[in-house]
Image (tube, rainbow, N blue to C red):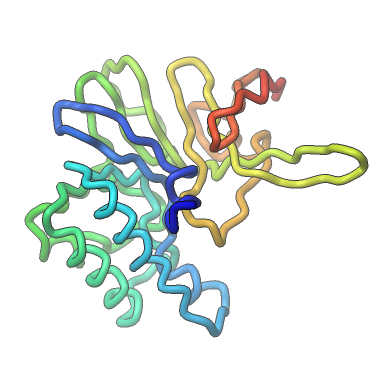
Length: 215
């Protein structure tokens, strides 16, 4: 089993005009600082190693690269280590609601670009916490909802992360294995342009189709 199997399952690899492009959502680097954990998971270092292992040309982060809303000295150190490891990869950050002041770190790296959204080859990449931008697109990829679903079998219930497809939108789960996620029905309500969605298709990270869910 790959040492990065969790990251592989919770990310998406696509081909774009930028080359081999890796999509991840909601890493929430520095989550330990906000959640009172005394241990250092080194999550951001493992995530950077995973990106490099895949030999990708570009990395698109669908928002909430960091967890704390501010930018403490410790968090800045974590982000600097993460970006420094990825100097040879083009990094695109669709700014999320947790990404305040992220530019103060990103500006030190010429390969890192921060915007509200990116439109590449007709594909829209955004976080999902604001209204849709007024641009035409064929397909959209977003995060923010942290989608998960509870599987029930033999009296046992288990919450699992899922990918969610509804119309032209594909919602990715958080790539952070330490963060559980929200029930799909609640998560989609956090996305202004999806909060009234009536149904969605669910996929396990392994690619297994769970079926259509009425919301």
